[in-house]
Amino acid sequence: MKKAILFVDDERQILKAIRRLFMDTQYNVFFAENGEEALRILEQEAIHMIITDMRMPNMDGYQLLKKVKEKYPLILRLILSGYAEENLIFKALQNNLARLYLLKPWDNQKFIETINQIFETEALIKNDTVLALVNNLDEIPTIPALYHKLCSLIDEDVDIKAIANTVEQDPSISAKLLHIANSAFYGAKTGSVNQAILYLGLTNIRNVVLSTSVFSTLKMKSVLFNKDLLWRHSCMCNKMVSLFYEKALCKSLPNTYMTAGLLHDIGKIALLNNFGEKYKEVINITENDQGMTIVEAEKEIMNISHQEMGGYLLSWWELPHPIVESTLFHHSPLDDRIINKELVAIVHIADNYSWQQLGKEKYSNIDRDTYKLLGISEEDCRKILSEVEVL
Image (tube, rainbow, N blue to C red; front, side, top):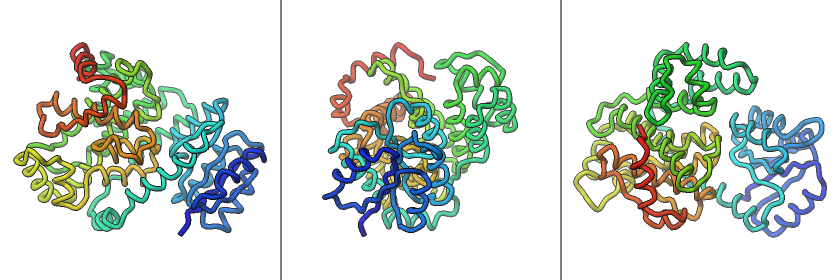
């Protein structure tokens, strides 16, 4: 069945250009000049993806995406807008109203290629094997209520004190937040949750709440993959992602991508919680067979990798597409289906260096072509890590 895409823009010339562009593609395309018309089409047609402008009269793109998420949560939501709407775009991504944004003016080939890649990634995540396994899970990690509450408070622009009071309702998350703020990487030196939030920023606070809550569901006590080790690895990986962006690429990691390192191994939690004994086999094979990676061992024993499981979870949670990609492809950073190749490549490198620093070299398997993709060297990365204490 052909995929159906609905484009929403109040500029007719934009819609005409898109109509011409998609005329000979494999997609059924629909067009609306405003939010109200878009909602009427959604009531009548089976739409798989909506791509909307942000600045429109009466109902803007943010309001439309919010309504679509509430009424049609399975529809993929994207933004096509200009630089002038940057704050509104960020707000939509921050609140999981859109998976990805494309900027005007667009490159025709890249535009179609990006949409193809999104649908291909969705098909990979939701294949029959993954869905069959997910349907038989005893327990699936869910986004915690505190995370939703924080998103709501941030959206309402409440003051930091109100946010701190909300976080302090969960002592374990408060303790983890203070631990991270006072780590060598941040060096906040504070015992105040309020000060920690000011120091780390709201995006990092949301990330800590999300990752801490999900990691707390891990019950299995394995010598190799206990909760503390996975948490340390993910935190270290997250710090390295920001560090490599800043020191190696000479740019800042976009705020909406700051969860990438923390959540890249989230699939391991679901697999460990539900298939602990089988996962011991995976670990044994990885430990004893020098030629087999952990992903290859997972596929052989369980018929699914932690990448696929993690990608499914993050897609189900409706996190931004680049975060889903960095989870789904962090062991295969040169896959043609990747849109944000830079982010996935950095997560791949950070993931491997983190395992090395934790003394788990057997779980490190860097694809050295990733350095070429990024235009950096192995020596650059090692020099950066030698100059900065990550944890």
